[in-house]
Length: 239
Image 1 (tube, rainbow, N blue to C red):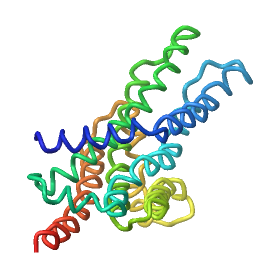
Image 2: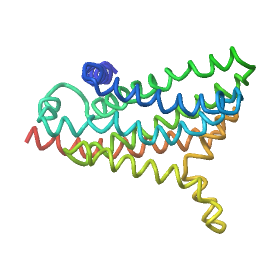
Image 3: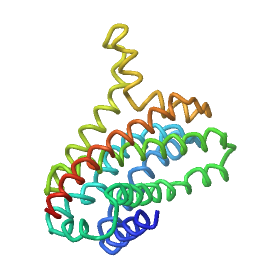
Image 4: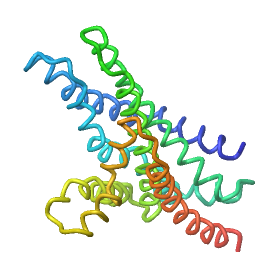
């Protein structure tokens, strides 16, 4: 556990000591702020729905920007070879980087809590629905972060890592949007594979074990892939 925290703290410190995280936070808040304020000022409705509907798509773009340097930068700079010789288990390195990226993205989402608080002043929001929507997006962040860590480990080039993670996340996002174009049982398969139905189910306050299992399985699967690759790479360092 100490190894995981050490790696996580190292990665978070590196990210927060650079302007990248703050630029991404500002962009994230500007985009989400637009979708929150649009119904408020244009049609005069204190409604959180448009903002919450757009958050998953925005996260598809944001999360890869946070995760793209996690492993790619280590490979490019040669610091992975140093990291590999330290007394850390391989799973501690992977999970530590996962925890760091997950925390950074979750912090960005936490900054948007100002929107429901403003809504609480102007109207009477359903706080249960708000809590469910944030919980659903946290599970989504975990899945996207695991995909991003996997993509980052495929190349030394951070841009390639970003594009792969974005493409995979976007496909999973769109899978639930094109159900009407496919017959049964293909639409059922797409509905399960896509993020939409699982995030919406949790947002409604329905903690179905199938939804939880879906996000846990996606995260575990994509974290296991770089774990195997890094284990082979570490053996090469020790050889």
